[in-house]
Amino acid sequence: CSAEGVEALLPEAVMAPQALQLPSLRMGNEWYGIGSGWTLAESMSATTLALVSQRNATAEPAAEEMVLLAARNYAQGIRPMAHESQPIYLRDQVAWQKGA
Image (cartoon, rainbow, N blue to C red; front, side):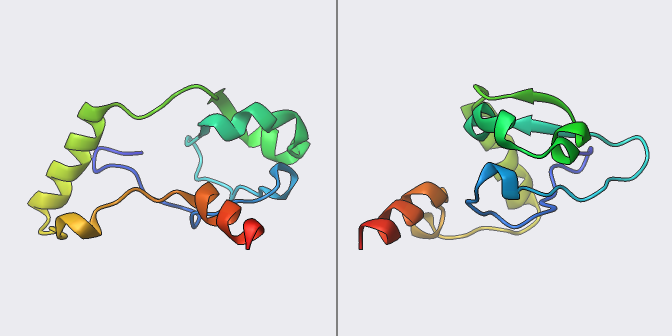
């Protein structure tokens, strides 16, 4: 995170907790683990856990945070059509593939 916003450092993916590998960050930057996947932290490698300074398995985005992200994108000329603006549900994609 910075004043300019959040930057994805890894692609969105579903994986086993032990497969998570975090890239090193510049000096002074820290990893924060956010979301329900962190309920499985005990299955993650010691190396990964050592890189994460804090974690919160119950945090969820608030509507006002989504509005701020949308406003920033709009100001930058990123204006997708409504039908193109949908959340990405990675778990649903995996569940669908397993059931096929």
